[in-house]
Image 1 (spheres, rainbow, N blue to C red):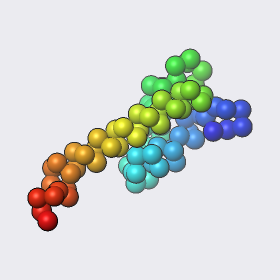
Image 2 (cartoon, rainbow, N blue to C red):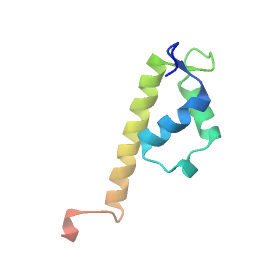
Image 3 (tube, rainbow, N blue to C red):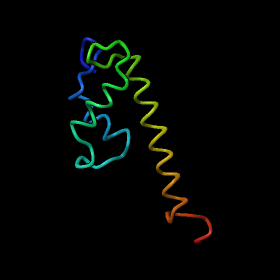
Length: 81
């Protein structure tokens, strides 16, 4: 978050990588702009604290669901032990 409590789309890059446990090559500027567009509820082109909380919640849930899918589709399972 910038000092004024808002974040421009270009500042989302490291945040999205961290929240989703992605590699830096897997996240593009276009992804960041799309996230900003989706979560920018007031249309000012930036992400404020309330919008940021929703973006974080979404990323954490999607990452957890992705991890769950990996486990179900050949990842670690209790049956392999």
